[in-house]
Image (cartoon, rainbow, N blue to C red):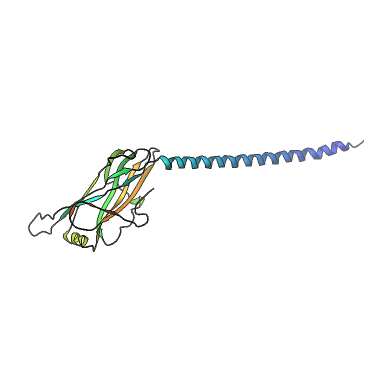
Length: 208
C-alpha cells in the first residue's frame, strides 16, 4: 500500500499548530491578566488620591488655657488652682467631617507623655457635630481641671510643664473613621487665654 507523504507531514504539523495556538492563548491570557491588574492598581491609586484630595482633616488651632486664682475650700487645706483649656477644632479638608468625640488628658510632667495608641482610645468627651470645611467659627470644646500648689509653682517656674494631649475622632464623607493626634504644653503665670504651644516631637501632632 503506497505511503502518503503529505498526510504524514500533516499529522506532524497539526499537533504543532495546536500547541502553538495553545501557547498563544496562554500568552494572551497572561497579558490580559497583567493588564487587568494594572488597571486595578490604577483604579485603586485614583481612588486613594480622590480620598486624600477630598477628605476632611480636623486639626487644633489657637489652643489656650485660663488659669485662675487659687481656691481654698476648707481652712488649712492646700490651695487648688483651677484651669480650663479651650481647644478650637477646625476642618482643613474639602468636605465636612462628623466629629464624634475626643480622648483628652492633661498632666504636669518633666517630659512629653507617650503617644496614645489606637488600643487605648476612649471617647470620654463625646459630641456629635458636623464640622464644615474651612469654617470661620470652629468647635470650641473645653477641658476643665486643676493643679496642686506644687504643680502650679513647678509649672510657673519652668521646672515642669502642663501637657495637654489626646486624639480627636471623626468620620469623613467616605464613611472612614479618622483620627488626629495632638500634644501641647504650657508653663508660665496665671492668666486668661494664655496660648499653649504645640509639641514639636515627631508624630506628636499628626493625622491618620
